[in-house]
Amino acid sequence: MLILPTGILSRNKKILIFAAKIIQVDKKDDTIFWAIIACLLWSTAYAGIKIGLQYDTPLHFAGVRFIISGIMIFPFTVRPALFIRMVIEHRKVVFLVTLLQTLVNYILFYLGMDLVPGALGAVIVGSQPLVTAVIAAIMHEGDKLTRSKVITIIFGISGVILISAGRQALRLGSVAELLGVFMILVANIATATSNVVVSLKSKGMNPFVLSSVSLFTGGIIIYLLSIPFESRPADPKPLEYWLVLIWLSFMSAYAFSLWFKLLQRPHVKVSELNLWKFIIPVVGAILSWLFVPGEKPELLTIAGMIIITGSLMLFFRNGLKKRTA
Image (cartoon, rainbow, N blue to C red; front, side, top):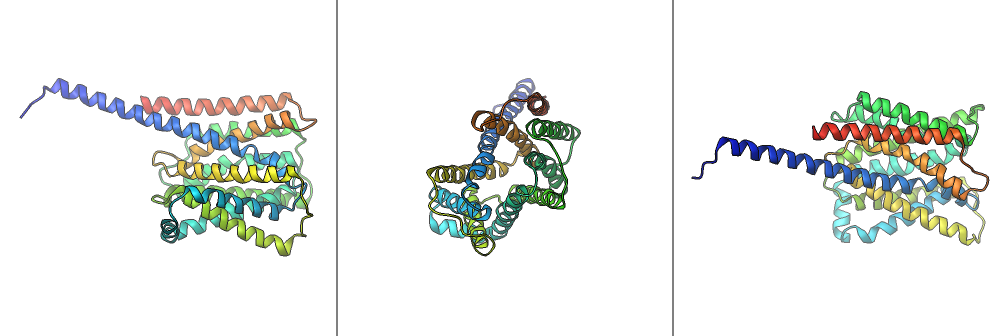
């Protein structure tokens, strides 16, 4: 038997520990990269929805969009027999994600945004990382609120408020607007709960299967709800409508599949992943400057962008230091 000196064993052990830390950091860096990609895709949704709703009703538009999204993902999942088996085995997760993420979230989001001023709606939607952090702390023992998370969330929401105030006056007046605020807050809670469910309960399920079945099923239900509650949208629709619809469908298909895959990673915390959603209003404002007539950079908006970017960079820089210490 070969006996190695204690010094060599100790040195090898240190090398292995250091290598393990590097691998962990690489995984985290990869997660951050793909989280940013998903948020960049989601940031295009607001302009697209605004264009689409010029030619369609909210529920009908959302229903058709998610039906197409579910169909787009299906060829990239698994063979049909395995697809059906996964859905049956994980039926509780499929039901909860479909109910919370697609139905409750998007129905209340579309209806709520229709009742509140755009800037106020953006602030409520922008509070989603805070709501997610609280829900994750309640439902997930390993994802507690920390001082650094709280500080990042406070600065993030402050940045969202500045961005929104720089683009449009913040106001809240009528009972209808209060109802709209409540709807968007409930939508945020539904999304946060869905994220935690995916993180805790969906291990062993292909994330593409989960996103395909939840988007398609939710889309069908939303479409059916639009029939009795909304007037039939006018036809024919212009090319602009169809281009936006196809883009939004693709964006949902790709972003949700990617997000569910990231949530399933064992080292990913739901609250930390959702902090990246603070970049959505930043990119949304930039896209408005580029494509919406009359939109231009404002001092408050730029200040909000700097605050959000700085807070995210500091949070994840400090987290990286702790993992490599």
